[in-house]
Image 1 (cartoon, helix red, strand yellow):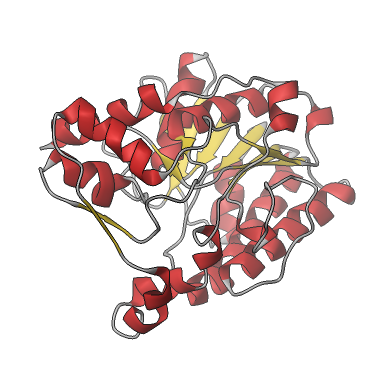
Image 2 (spheres, rainbow, N blue to C red):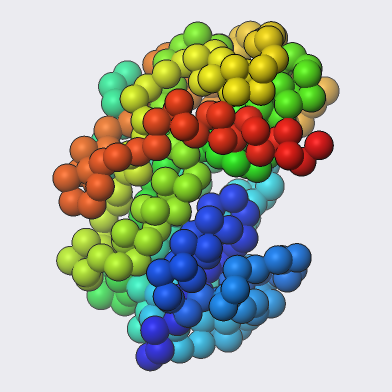
Length: 312
C-alpha cells in the first residue's frame, strides 16, 4: 500500500482538501468523471464513475486513504438510488486496498431536533434525504464494526466560503451582494444558524487524514464560528463590499406550494426543520481532540463576499 490519498469529488470541499493535502506534502489523486480545469501542483487526476464498482476499485488501486467529498443532485429519487450504491462501492474498494475512508458528510441524519446536534444522537428515519443519510451511515458503521474497513465521518452543517456558489450564503447571498442586488434567502434571516467555513472543513479533513486508527469508527463535527444569524453574516460581507444589505426571504410555510412549480423548492420543503428553529452544532469532541479555532465570521464573510466580486 502506498502513501497516496485519493479524493473523490472536486467540489468546494474537495478542492480545498486537495490543496491543503498537497501543501502538506501528501501525494493526492482526484477521482471523478470529469477532469478539473486546474489542479494544485503535484496533484493528479483519475477518471472514475463513483456508481461503477470496477471503476472505483481501479481508482483506489493501492492508495492508503480515501476522502469521500462527493455530492449528488438535490433530488430525493437521486439520493435513494445513488448514495447507497456509491457508499457500497467505496467500502468494497477500501476493503480490497486495505485503505481507510474519510467521509465528508452532512448533518441530515439527525432529523428534527430541539437541542444542539451531537455525534451520539440516534439516527432518524425522517423524510427522504435524512433517511438516506441515516442509511448510508449504517452502511459504513456496519463495515467498520465488521473489521472490513476503517471509516470516519467528518460532519458539517451548511457551509460557505470563497467562491462557494452552492450555499445558502453563496450565489444568492454574497454573489448577489457583489452584483449590487438584493439577497434572496430560502430561510428566515434572523434565526441563529451554524455555518461551517469551507477552508475549516478542509483543515478538518487534514486532521483526520493524519489521525491514528483509534480516531476512526466514529463521527466528528467540524467546529464552527460562534453562532450568528444569516443577516448578521451577510452584513459583514456587505460591509466589506461597501454595499447596502437588502434581503428578501421566502416564508418556510410557502415551500410546499412553491414546490408544485419549482422542483428545488419541493426538495427543500422536507428540510424546513433545519431553518424553522435555531440550529446549533456541538463540536466539543472534535475541538478537544484536534483544534477549536474556527475561522471567525469577521474573517470568513468578507473573504467569501470579496471572492464573488473578483469573479465579476
